[in-house]
Length: 296
Image 1: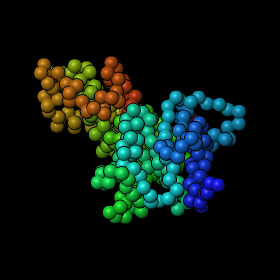
Image 2 (image 1 turned 90 degrees about the horizontal axis):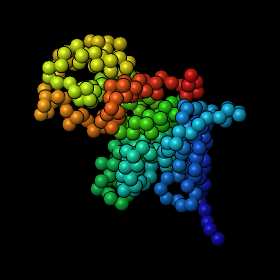
Image 3 (image 1 turned 60 degrees about the vertical axis):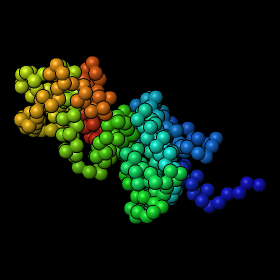
Image 4 (image 1 turned 45 degrees about the vertical axis):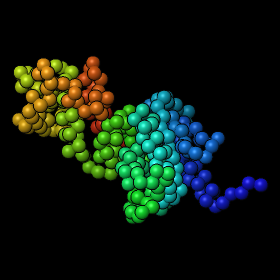
């Protein structure tokens, strides 16, 4: 006869507990019961930001067609296969991120793909498997894995951010903490993002070294305003004073797409770059400002 241990039971219960948290966000879950490898939960994400879906009665919502994978761990320390984590990161860049939930002293916490990526370099010398620990104590066999608190009202926005802007989420780790309510407004990161986006906008608009400064100022201040800065005109002025526009040009003196960061290029629409950049910045603020328990 088959045998089980108390650890098997704890693992199954923790997986059910995480599934319960996710179901309350209107997520449809396929449990991968056919094998005990890979991911524990395959999640279909709704269009809406939902909380306490069980209280909605006969109300309905649409699923977005987007998915995430969830791995559940029962302990604040354990083993992760290096190759598996690398595969999770590849999946994230293709639009299907993997989150790892861990039960930590009666409080659910989760690691984003960015947390897992940051853990990975500390484990490269162990190609088979390497230990993680949430306590922060680094040893030869274990490396710290940073996590975020699961917050019922914030987690739907975190999920949306990762499925809609995976490259951006990996490149700008502060944004997830901001959306999750763990830090204040990351002005430095937002300022950096605006400055990267404006290069894409100028490249799409065919800006040259001879373009009227007022045109540059208007497009840049529009991005700062969409990012939520009150002093958007002054920020645009300050940036234009210090920028050397010829450093962004190539060949025919137009701002070159070669100067656009790869992550930024994939985050905006090449045929409508200005509008899509503004939409992106407004979406970041919407995800931060929206309470999933009261999305309206």
